[in-house]
Image (tube, rainbow, N blue to C red; front, side, top):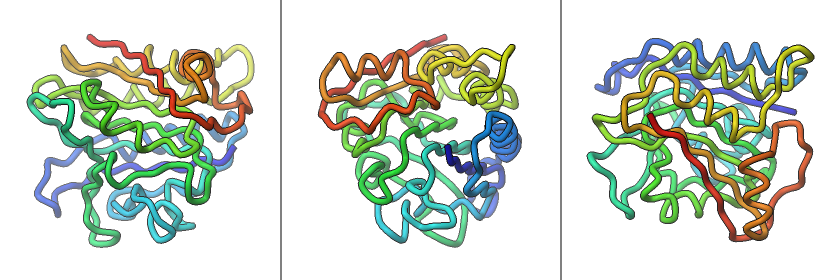
Length: 246
């Protein structure tokens, strides 16, 4: 399958705290997925990751060189934004740092629609701070699925946060890329429950959410769908999610 990555470490030009491992996370993800036979579409870093890449529209998520709707799989490592504490109506965010494709902050629930443009994105992997708060999944993430199969992220607060990790993304990629024996291949949901809890603060949770035509299909996807399952796009309004907290 085709995949893209976006990794942002340098937030200094935007006045945010910079990170240390996000570019390497994207490189590690690429290495594992290419070893699994997947094909890289784009692998942008720092200012080449644009906020518009995550926003709905032909010049945004459908942009051929960087849009998240172009590949079947998109992995992002960088900043999100946490509240303390989020409520059921609070938004979730992705935050990059570039002079292109501004604004740099994307309100996921209001601006992200995956599956309705190039209609190819099946799996969205967000390794960031608080882009998938459990309390607000209904008001934020239900809007995002327009053919998207499964998405993963973290739920937390400013004091229960996702830490800058060199291991989490690499281990998740190794378990989902479909590597030859003796490497195990897990479902996306199960792999994230194992690896999404690496290097997070107490109270933070790894979250996976899936869509289906009914409860049974959505439940099947969140528990069993793998990157290489080959299942068709969901067409329904049922959502099932699971989480693991530390």
